[in-house]
Length: 169
Image (cartoon, rainbow, N blue to C red):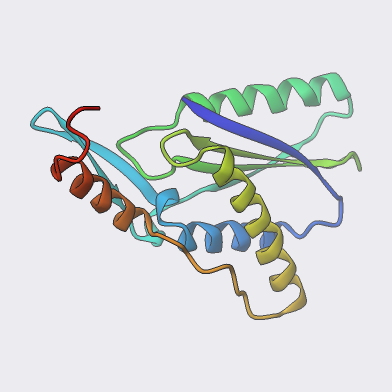
């Protein structure tokens, strides 16, 4: 139940700045810090504080064989995707594959479908590009304002469902 996007990234990409960009992104978007608990037969969503979320892993690809590197990327990608845990924050993860032999680096973004959809991906990727660009140039990070927070959206859904307006649906 997750989605993933793989990107080829340039060799001169600054990994430390990328990690900071991902951290800023997660801090900005509450839904990326979600975790879920089942209590008394009902699932509940909770937004964790940013400090509790570790969402960036860098892996060096040390093989010179492109087949071996592809196998390593695939194995690590599958490992991370199968280990997403609803009970813990970290339903949004970044894997950065650094090629030590000058091949193009790769970045894999993985997110549980509970925290992203197709529209969300467009926003998140654009925000990562914006944040990275601002950090690399030493500029203030300004993202588009949030339209509706995840918390407010969830409360509005509860209000709508309790209003009786949708009882026939």
